[in-house]
Image (cartoon, rainbow, N blue to C red; front, side, top):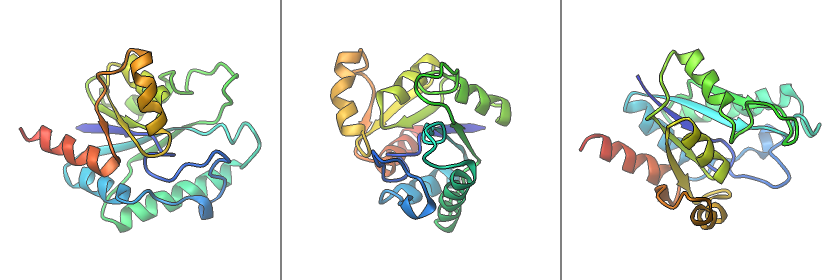
Length: 183
């Protein structure tokens, strides 16, 4: 089983400093739904791992988050793809949990749920935290410039992560990963 882990905000959908609090605020980044469809057609198990501190901050509740994820999964399916699971950290940045990226608890949850091995698999994100989580779990990190990715790209050099591949968006990243998988 080939598994790939994607961050949500800034990778699949447009990000907001005010948080995505409702399905109406969730807007896919152009090409992201097609990218997930490509991954699905190539036999990848697609997992989403996302920090959702808006829950801890009281900006939205579990029902709103479920509705957002339902919209995301439905739109991906309408585009011919499939998200096999959405894993989220509901905690705030100062709660000391083991699931908030750059911690690896969400990745452990994915391995348990899918009975897979993630070390060596790709993880695509738009933040240094995503890249650090991937590295800490021996995954292959990929950064996209969408969301907070352009700012994060500049930070890679100061974080000792300058060797991480960077692509304009999820579609460009997945297209290249699929091509290199066939080489």
